[in-house]
Length: 157
Image (cartoon, rainbow, N blue to C red; front, side, top):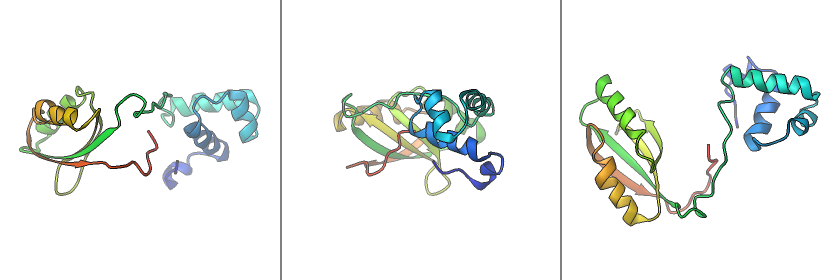
């Protein structure tokens, strides 16, 4: 994890060490974390709670292995909308939340409006998701699909 300089100025060495350590292992016992950063348990716990309260830590989750779950087909979809008014953007944003196969959705400044990361079991399942779900999202005018052959770096955030 790399922090921006504006964020770093608000955090001290111990805060940054906590964030870096927990980003690698969110299940690390507080005693191990405290030992790793050079503080005792109580101040380390207080700092973790403060970092959560201030929004630096937004939660903890298990990172699943998609291949083990039969979900290792990844496609990136460029989506161009027919309307980019705020009402249309908000309608698209709400609707995309309801499609479980869409793992990520990013609004893009460029030749298209959104980039979706879609995860399915195979190309046939992806084709169904594209035809029945993505194309049916509000204000979708066109889409272009790029299938991932291999994830070279995937942090799983």
